[in-house]
Length: 180
Ligand SMILES: [Zn+2]
Image (cartoon, rainbow, N blue to C red):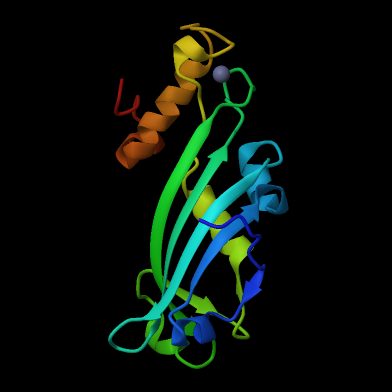
């Protein structure tokens, strides 16, 4: 992978015509929404590889690989925790106004306006998808230590409910909670 900084804006349709590969880095500090999700500004660079080509039907396709070292704040001790991210994604691209109607409802389709794709925002979105809803150190590694009576328990319960939407539903119905 190359160390050159990728441009913020590219023309993905032109890149797809040429089957180009963009390979470089992006600055995590330039991603404000990521900073908000991390609870602190991002530091350092993320490595990015983006392959542009066309699927057999002719629609442009973007395949990406992003590697980063994120450090969200642990929600138990509020200290940063190491979160290595290595994520791959693939999406088809449609041009706003031209093919949008036919593409609505399809999965993994990105609508691009003005023939310009914002690579920073795209990679920022992919990184945010990799963040846990509630970042937590493992209990033994956490500054706050293992405190069963601490609200870490509530956080765990919340995580559990997130995987089980019916738990929340049960509570809304006025029951004692599906997990008690
Ligand atoms: Zn912690």
